Image 1 (cartoon, rainbow, N blue to C red):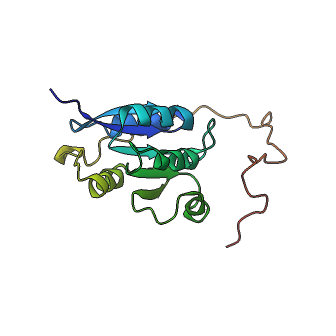
Image 2 (cartoon, helix red, strand yellow):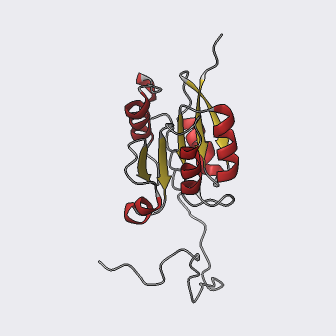
Length: 176
């Protein structure tokens, strides 16, 4: 029996990996995951996935874009389609990616599962979605409001006086 195709999901956030792994489960492929770019590079070289979904900003071995550049230099993975799913704006993310590579697509977070299935199909010809899978993960139901909510004492609430930004965040507020 031939082995199944592999879809590689790469993100340093375990919640994103778990969400995408559950939402993209399909009888058409098996899912492999990696939490950093170095592990993803090694898995991709070894398993030769038919498609890779990756974040941009991750620890180890540079970033997701460094991993994509390295994979393009490997004969076994040079043509592997990649969907980059990032929290960066497209304007910030696009210059980080190899230019003029039709096998690389960019998507902003939060990821839209229907769009991911469509992109996988467009880039690979593999249709992993099923008719009943258009919304594979349902949002949890809202809790019923209680008649007598617990009062909140806000006298002890301490709000930060300054917002700490990550090193790669802009220091100036965005202009409209």
